Length: 152
Image 1: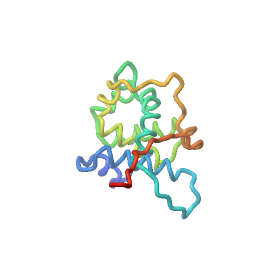
Image 2: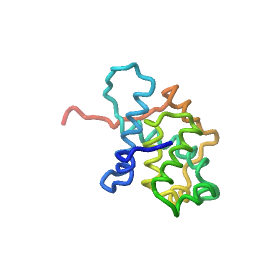
Image 3: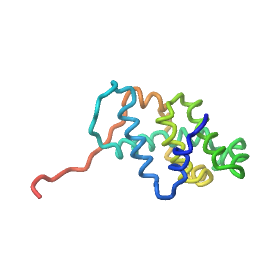
Image 4: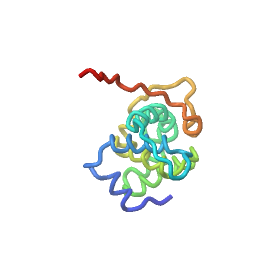
């Protein structure tokens, strides 16, 4: 799985923060399987955050073991950053059968957090986490929007 120079630059750019990729994940969640040409207005950031919160444990289970990167990932850490990024991207695409549009923000979030810190962080573990494709297909995320007081 190859990542373009532009995509890699965006992932590695310190000016592009995690919030950007959370937003992108929300956009991809909302538009997944949407009819061509349709336009939505949605709380993309909130959807992205809810989606990430639901899938983070799944991603950790594939990339990490006992709070550390798995051996195949560990081997790549000391090497080229592009190879590590492409390996994580390939693992996400192959494991979850998602498009690059979904896999790139997921990979970016892992890379932005740092793979070692990502693995060391214990995500809130669902007793039975939903599969990524199930979340996408069912559009099962529920978000709570802040109340807006029109009297102000």
